[in-house]
Length: 371
Ligand code: FNR
Image (cartoon, rainbow, N blue to C red; front, side, top):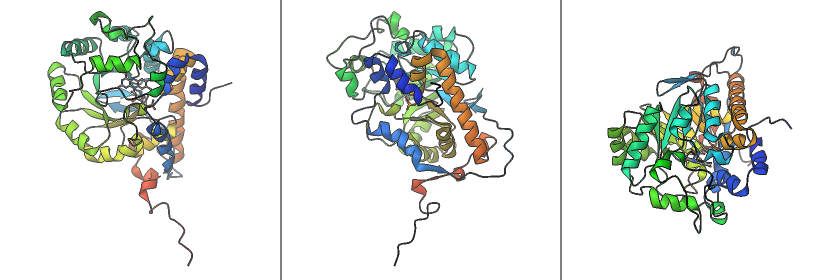
């Protein structure tokens, strides 16, 4: 049967993938409250479309950190993509580049920065996890720079791995025929089987729990690349990120895989946007599955969005063609949403094009109680 929306790839991936792999991709932390909320919150935002505007031409292009892309829809970093498909991150990189958008490569990719660069031209960001051994970090950042990556997305919500119970039950571990390719030469590319989640043990052993704002400044002493701080969801941390020299913020709760019961990212977005005061761009990821979601995020002030799981599920289902299709479907849905809302370019998308539950009572008049 023909796939007509992004969500349908999840069921196909579930059929195709080993349970351990599907569960790792799909899961959230603990009660998975935030996982559901990342999606549900979008349904609390409704449109206030404008009519009788010439929408015969629609421009979805935008500029991110000075790089022009075809649409404000980008690819979030997600680890270990070769578990989904033999071509893994290489297929994702090709699909992103064909769509004229940005791919973010995970530190924990099963393809190296050099291999991804060798797929051809494309604008790519590198997601960084900070290891206890800072020589490892410095080497990796240098390799990403040489391989032509244009920015570092520094993930700041993972001093420890969130409690993902499916991974504990499945004793999740990277399959032995794969490695965390960026760390292969450093003897950190393998993941040992553990009594719980092999990844949680790996993180506990290697990732630096002491990471703090001063390390964001340290990072700027070892690289000229702009730094996006990924995982901010409060105004307080937005201000600190700007002070620390961040080039942008990604409002993210790590796809609901870290701290459960944090708000949906789309609910946290406006707080961050207001605190950023237009000084640096604010992006969002988490639960974006429809063009309408993209529009809502932009209306609430995001400069662009990233998608995570849809890439993994479509990759599992159809490889590069699947990822291309996901990007194409989101592009078409977003274009249609713009047209039906009366917007012909991204700058025309405003806060007045949406109304949210938290805007009451202006646009959701409640019936007066009967006397
Ligand atoms: C992730 N995410 C993630 N983030 C990161 O900074 N480094 C990483 O290696 C990973 N790996 C990863 C693996 C898997 C299986 C998932 C689902 C997610 C988080 C990712 O970048 C992004 O924040 C979320 O996936 C966005 O939410 P959606 O689109 O998956 O709902």
